[in-house]
Length: 172
Ligand SMILES: [Zn+2]
Image (cartoon, rainbow, N blue to C red; front, side, top):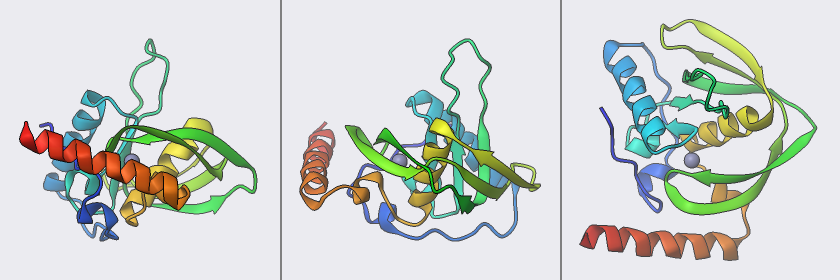
């Protein structure tokens, strides 16, 4: 089932999320809903707070080749355990900040631990777009948005556009 995506500014996007204690069917259904919502948007990552659920859960799929099978990842309680000194800059966007893009510099490679959909502990190194995306999504779980890396002027400009967009959408 597709879920509505919250648009910035929203207090729920600024909250630190709680770790998931026990994996339940309810949480697995939530992860499946998030993947469906992400693919439909379309996007390459989605964090639970973006649909108003304050749990440490993210989903992502950064496979860019349309001829490749999808590579969905479901991560409960994801954590960056090591980051490279090498940095990488990508033009980032966010499903909660539609049509706004800006360069963000982050560690180029990260090692991440998480629990998968079946509750198994996993560990993997990511680079390229995957590394950027997983860091962007984990930031969401700490109430941090990509615009928080930008200067105050740019951030305020984008926020004003989003306030306007939300007003227009509310009017229908
Ligand atoms: Zn985002």
